[in-house]
Image 1: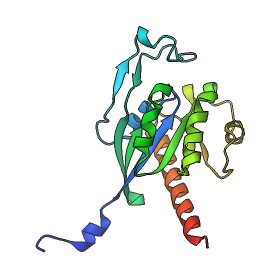
Image 2: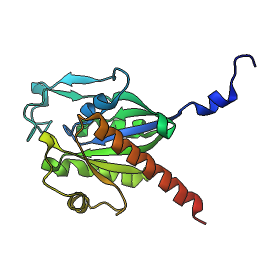
Image 3: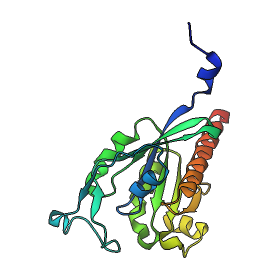
Length: 199
């Protein structure tokens, strides 16, 4: 076929779908925006009086908008030979029904947590553990501070797999987010190898 270069075709980055999940207000939209090489799609709406008594703003009183469907961004990791399509899930409980739809085709997930409100992270951890999807935990260091160690966070989350990576990051920092995504890819590859090697 004229113009077709098989070597170039083999070098095209493989598309990989990744979910970015977590509780309400942990920084999912910020994470996708920080790393996306395209203008991210956001489905944010302003918080209104209708959410009073429904949305728990304890600890995030300054929050004025929330994701109501998903965030979407893309990053090419040429050194890993992949292009990651990032789908940020909505955080409020009333939108969790969408998570199963977003899960289709995903190879892994980043569960973003805020250790000031760690209890909001349990549903996301349970969701991925129950569905067997590889994930890493990213502890968002608000104001550049994190009073807990990775081991303390792992114990508090009661992760079933002790090998699940728990990483510190600033969701606003592109390099931090990129490192977490690379760690997730390593986790996905390790899980795939282990499953292939099993009798």
